[in-house]
Length: 269
Ligand code: HPA
Image (cartoon, rainbow, N blue to C red; front, side, top):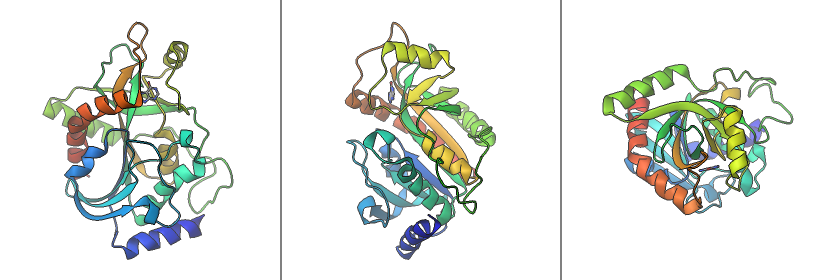
C-alpha cells in the first residue's frame, strides 16, 4: 500500500505538485469552488498513476493544484462513491495520497438530505459528527506506518475549525446549522420510513459520501472540516420527489456561500 501511495505522490511531485497545506474534496454540484483557485496544475484522474476514475454525472475527475485563500491546496474535483462499485480502499486511496503529499488539513463538502425539521433547502450544515453506515474503509490489513489499527473517532471533525467557520459565517451573515451527518451507501434516495429511522437514530442530514474520506483522514491524523448543503428534505410532510438533477441545482445555489466560508477558513490556517 505505502509503495503504491509513494508511486502516485512521486508522479504528482514530478508534475509540480509540491507541499500543499490542505486538501479539498468537492461534492455533487459544488465543483464551482475551483473557479476561485488560481490554478497552477490540473491533472485528469485518468492520467494519475493508481487513481480510480470517477463515473457519475456532475463529478468530473480532476486533481487541481494552486492557491486558494493564500494557501497551497490540492482539490479533488470528483470523488469516488461506494455506490459506484469502488472498493472502500479505492475510495480511501486519494486521501492517503494527499496526506503523503504533505497536507495537514482536509476540507470536504457534500450534498445531503435534511432530516432536522429546522432545516430548509439551500441551508448549510457544518458537520460536527457522523454516523457511518457505509462499510468502513479501514477494514482489512492495517499498515501501522500509516495509522493505528483502532483509530479514535471522538473528534472526527476539528473543533477549532468548526469554531472558526462559525465566526466566519456570522461575520458574512451566512446562516449555518451544525449537525450530525449520516452516510448511507445509496444509490437510492431514502423511503419516508428510512428518513424517519435516520432521524430517530440521531442524524440531522443524510448523504452518500464523506465518512469514508474522513475516517481515512483521521486514521492518518489529518484535521477535518466538512459541510453539507441541504438539497432536499427528508422531513415528514416536506418530502418531495428527489432527482440527481434537483440535488445538483440546489447545491449550486449554495455554492457561493460555502466557498466564502471555505476561503476564509483556509486563509486562517
Ligand atoms: N439522501 C441521500 N443522499 C442525498 C440526499 C438524500 O436525501 N440528498 C443529497 N444526497
